[in-house]
Image 1 (cartoon, rainbow, N blue to C red):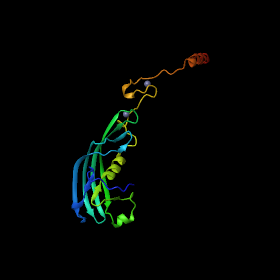
Image 2: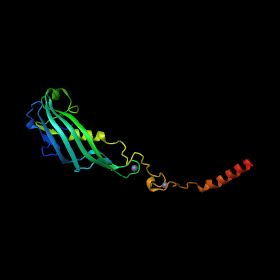
Image 3: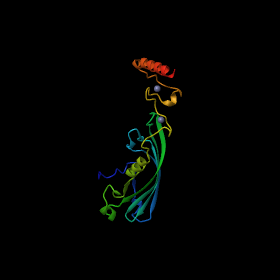
Length: 189
Ligand SMILES: [Zn+2]
Ligand SMILES: [Zn+2]
């Protein structure tokens, strides 16, 4: 984990100085910001710079600042079965404690267990990233019953007639089939 200070100009970095570290004091952050890069996985993610709808309360508690609220975004990707474009509106809960530097929590937890404030700056990005990625499907689908692609020609089943089949009989076996048929005919008589 990097220990670089958050960029105060970054869209998801908020200055909590106005809370004065006074427990119970709260500020409401409700705004739309451009999504940072990397909100998701290869093939399914919130596109960078697309709108991220942030609605959180930042509340001073004894050990730090609690970020509590919701984040909305539109994730884009492709269907794992038919490769059609997929678009999902995601709305996730964010609830994360940011410990004050020098607090007991700061001293007794690892950096990857509890997030930290940097001075008065609170970087909401890791909390938003975790919440959104958790809400993303392991297998994105255009619809739950997507039939996928024909294994032989790769055309989506949705675009093929119900009776679509491929004649896969090898000519070398075709003759054998005739023999078998003749045998069967013979036995049945
Ligand atoms: Zn599909
Ligand atoms: Zn086919």
